[in-house]
Image 1 (cartoon, rainbow, N blue to C red):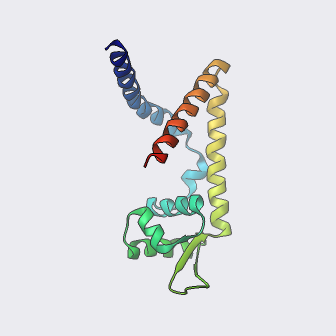
Image 2: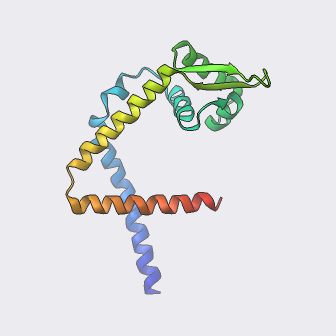
Image 3: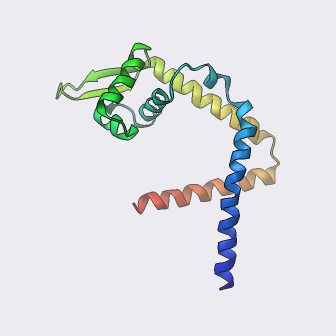
Length: 155
């Protein structure tokens, strides 16, 4: 019974730390990379860019499903990204009814700059930590990833 009680207390403590994430977000907000703030994209457009960056060339229907929007809505979002030069839309050589979307060179550069600016910001924060703090963050991150992977494989 004590083990279960200790475990429950730990789970409660971790969940309480979620409120600390809000505090962390408030502290980090002024540190948002300028690159992100200069980007003139809507949230739906950003979601498309993120999916294409992660998944690579994607069918328009799969993109709509990933975003949980209708095909018409996804098409409109992609149209605006095509106009801005961030996305390329192509017909499949094997089936012209299939529309594939991918990041253009400009889209890849944009996403690369965003990822790099996020990495740079993380490095600045980590640079302010002691070696023991870095070890704690590293181990916590490893455990979090390990459990998340286990949960994914159980789906």
